[in-house]
Length: 173
Image: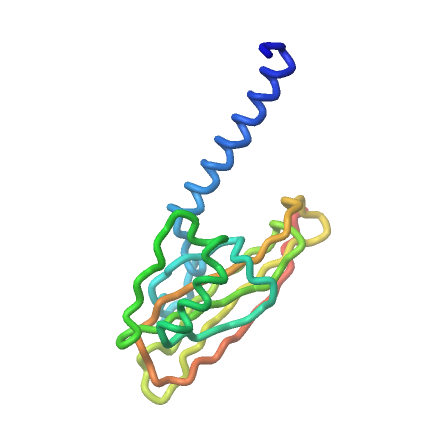
C-alpha cells in the first residue's frame, strides 16, 4: 500500500484538491471591477458578482425586477456562481438586478465586463454598455468552456434599459 506509485498518486490528488480549493476561494472572494477604466460620466451600480462560469449557455441580457425572477435565475446559476454562498438579498421594492450572460465560449480567453450610463437621468435611457473581448489567433488560452457573466444591482427605475455590446479581438503578438 505504501509503494512509491501510490504515494505519487496521493500527492497528485492532494495537489489537485488544494488547487481547486484555492480557485474556489479566489473566485468567491475576488470582486473584479465591472469595467476597467470606466469612461467619465458613468455610474457603476453595485457589483453582485462577475466571473467566467455562470453555467448559462446562451447569450442573454435580463432586468430582474421581482423576487420570483431572481429565484429562477439564481437557481440556474447558483451551482456555478455561488458555491458555498447564500443568495444575495435584493430589496425589489427599491432595487433591480441587471444580469448579462455572454453565452458559452470555447476557451478562457474571453474578457467580459459592463458599465452603466444614464442612471437617474429623467427622460434618458439607462444604457448597459457591454464589452466583450475575444482572443486573436496568436493568443494562448485556457482550453475549457466558459460562460462569462456580470450581475449588477441598481436602484429601481422606470427608465427604459438599453443594452449595447462592443466586441473586439485581442492581438496577443
